[in-house]
Length: 297
Length: 313
Image: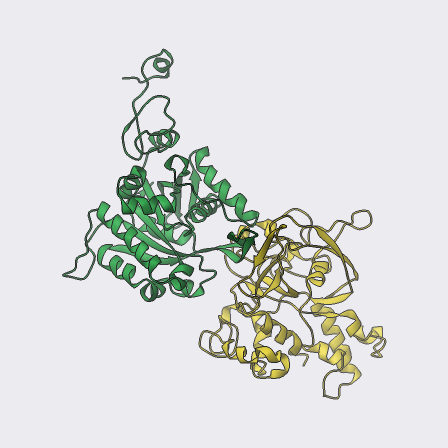
């Protein structure tokens, strides 16, 4: 389970396997290595007002752990190989018939741009793309996590300057865009890069690529609003995506606050995801009878 | 003959100037060519340039996305790498770029282009292409108007109504036909037929006719790129544009095969996702939620490679 990065299942003790304290200590260490603690606080969510300017709504966020990196092709391959697409446990009943259409270029279950159920060998460490929101949620459930909500994602990305500077920064590194810190159109990469690239754009607690490389699915419906007397009709139900991607043209659309959406079934070339878990879901190391020494080991 | 600045300032008659489009003589003080309504500022800029110049025609039905395509193309070129870059030659060229980019960043598409020829925005830019090994830079000046779809339709139906269109199309070594991929997919044969009208208008002005006996296109002629726009909402077009054309615009596909020796199909999009805004009166308009251009530059690169207008330095 640890090899497949399913350590959260050990920590929340959802596994059927008898696991001892040693397993728990390894799981805890894996979590600390793979995820970053985002302390509780508030974020200002801009209303999804597409037409008439946006107003901010102060929204509380509980503390949670968020993946330091987006889920990579190699990570997602473990889910595919474990039969995740065939296991109804991880999918909502209403969309079960649609899973038959979640296939790769060769008709095998898997992300849209894979072949024969395998990712491109030169992109194992790139973020997985070509997965719809439901596939992202299924993977998250398989590893014992979930997709962050819009406010959880934004809380992880935005860092104020401390007391007296409550305003959220536009980017994890500050308020000024820098193409060396995020893979967007301005960086001229023209494609995804490994999930560990652009390290200069990390948050202070080591979360990578919250801006750029791929849009990230979040667990919030996208309901854009228009001015009075107007309504916005969507062609299909949309879910929010955050952070911008390698082909995001305007850096004003790749900020920590910018909200946009994609169809929930879209399997796009530039949308990936990362997972999170509420801190209250996890037992404290003391409850697991883990000493500081065992964690240090 | 006036050859020095001092002669000009001594009240002597001005230098004879000609419209870059229709080659008619321009009178002093005219802001537009009286014949084809091309801005005099464009003709002045073009006259001051050396090296190869070519018109680029961007044709398509109303609402096919010509303005957005051209404005974004110009913006991408202006931020391009050394390998393929565009530099505007005058402030007037930036008007179109500014109009489109400002609107898109505010999550709106720009206003429709007016049908009146004197309201069209023109772009004039120098494209430079540098190849690394051996290092070699090629240049070409492109001139292109943002034509109104309604005007194109009227000109095709009754030639001569808009002289600028006729002159630009007949002078273009590179042409683009934009087709709305959603209308192609959903609205029956109308988009196919209109695109074929445009293709035959081009063929007529370039003196081309399909070689029916041999079933292939006559040699020479302009390079024509057929671009399916809005493919963010029609992924079938971006998966394989030529196959999409063969299956969904069979008339245009066959006509191009028989008429244009150099033609290719492309797919392009600007928005990552979009929706429709409806007001109380029932008016509808699309709004882009975010911008992620795809396939904007490729048609131009292909056209330049297949047009005899580039020079080496």
